[in-house]
Length: 169
View 1 (tube, rainbow, N blue to C red):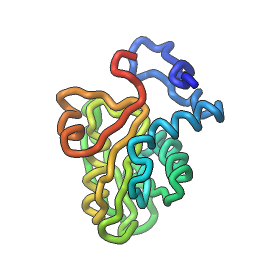
View 2 (tube, helix red, strand yellow):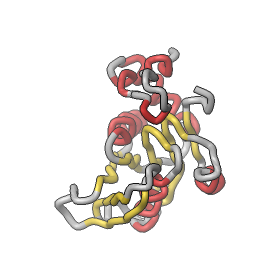
View 3 (cartoon, rainbow, N blue to C red):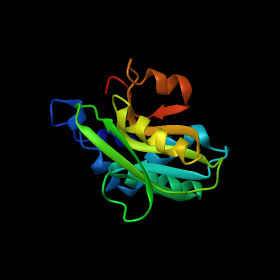
């Protein structure tokens, strides 16, 4: 199934493309999830971590398909329990904060990070920092769109990265 055709590209700038129509079509969403986890089939993944907000949708579906738990990385100020926090500048240069519940897993837990869109890698680098600070091992990073550019090159060099939206789309 060509689920990428469902992405609303009515805005001129690619970052404003809307992937949510995929979620409304069960067969398309299932195909997306299968394609996102393809590189990790048969490998050990203990948890899936998704970044706020669309990474929650993608990550939860992936976790269910893999039969593992899901752990959210939340926007700052959202967690009412003890947590770790990291500040970063997003793709637009705006200051942001991510939080991860304290002690979310045993040390050495293999984590698959997920998000909807990775253009500069700023948000996923913040999530990686939280995962590694919590004793997790990043098994990989998966996103619908995961751009290869000079800003994301260190992620592609260090981690197993995967995106399903072609660079030219």
